[in-house]
Amino acid sequence: MQRVYNFSAGPSMLPLAVLEKAAAELVCYGESGMSVMEMSHRSPEYDAIIKDAEAKIRTLMQIPDNYKVLFLQGGASTQFAAVPLNLIRRTGKADYIVSGQFSGKAFKEAQKLGYDVKCVATTKDDNFDHVPVVTRDMFRPDAAYVHICFNNTIYGTKYPYIPDTGDIPLVADMSSCIISEPVDVSKFGVIYAGAQKNMAPAGMTLVIVREDLLDYAEEKMPTMLEWKTMAENGSMYNTPPCYAIYMAKLVYEWILGLGGLEVMQAMNRKKADLLYGYLDSQDYYIAPVKKESRSMMNVTFVTGDPELDKKFASEAGKVGLKSLKGHRSVGGMRASIYNAMPYEGVEALVAFMKKFAAENPKA
Ligand SMILES: Cc1ncc(COP(=O)(O)O)c(C=O)c1O
Image (cartoon, rainbow, N blue to C red; front, side, top):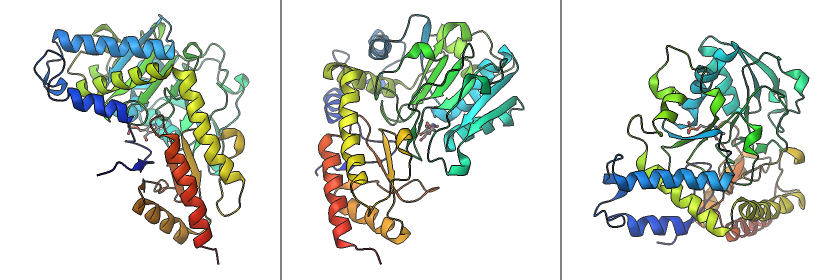
């Protein structure tokens, strides 16, 4: 069977070259005589894999030496709790920017734990069609951290800038834009991301944390959520998500082979420009996101008629353009065009959009 163009928001497409390499190594990895899936995480072979994964993400993202890299479990959602549990004790309070569903969930999770957290800015009243513009004076000077979601997967928005929080550590959920373009890690206290969009199969969460922020964990907290414990144990306090980490290593290798994050960014820019360029050139489809907040990874659009939207996703699926239905909470369409989506996939989508518009005039 032929592979389709999969526009799923996550889990999503992985690079074909990576899948093929993994397939070639699936049954016997190197000289080990076994699959990576079957390997002890304490074996020398696996130790080399996890160390290589770390070395490669460090090179790719140019992560400064004073940051730890952790490969954890539990998805990005577990970090919604881990962030306050590891950091809030620094001052006892934290500020959040709510720019969509996931940053809202992160805020609520910290509230649920009973902490003094404040939503300092939100674009909820505008249906999250852009990200808030924030300035340093909006944050409480004694906040332990400021939390943002850098790319809002559901609404298709992304910060076009890094919020200036002064000395307050900035914590960013980068689940849906990690390694899609270069980012200055030194501007962040913590970066975290679920793997299943741009890095690997679901099951692994990447956490990048500045070393001086490892000393504020609550005394009474689950060991598994404590970044310091994980850092001291090389992400192997317990069994790590071994296979997902191995896959991430292959993905990092693939991007490095292409030339790194500048090249990846140019490829992603070209795809996004093609799609947004078409959206801006016609009036059959509406792109609800304000231009300055447009995401390069998740592109949302609607026809304005929910029945046509449904028909669009269904007919696109029949011609190999899969998972274009918008998130269940917002409807419409969403094309997730992560790193692994080839340019040809976006060309095929635009061609289909033109054909659909011509064949389905609005009443
Ligand atoms: C930006 C963002 N944050 C958090 C999550 C939740 O991730 P997980 O399912 O890994 O917990 C998602 C999932 O789509 C996401 O897109």
